Length: 212
Image (cartoon, rainbow, N blue to C red; front, side):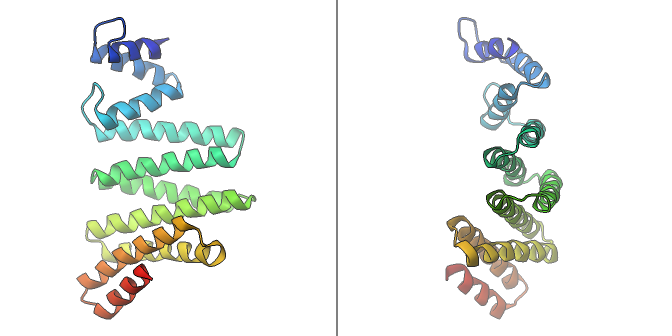
């Protein structure tokens, strides 16, 4: 009830637009566990629909969505619910990373990698295992990129190489396009890292692998 009234005030449907009331109503619905309200708050803070962009609020509601989707997956596991959960997790990390909120990005990427590692030890379905492995690789790729941007080059190299290792293992077995792309991105950033260290031979090797 609060959610739909909030939407009406947000869009001016049969009432005058009132962004403050809309936010209050939609937030109340989200706090009461309505997933659609949580998703709407994410959209509002992402696209500034009646609110100013606020990465902390955006991260808060993206994290709430992750917890909801994880609960849905755990209550009735299937690959679609697993993908929804892991994608929401990655989008949370990505939002923090792309807005250069590195403390938040580091926190959520670390949590995501731990959760993926835990899942990999439990999953029996090959498709679900491969999906989780891919998101583990993406999390390492982003962590490596973030560490590169913040000048932590040893940490960057560790996570980039881990991401590349994951991609290469899958490429050798099934040649999936998304792993080939992730692999190329990892090599490109690693090449830049070697250039900063004046390691021209290693940089050239990575660049060659990136374009191979």
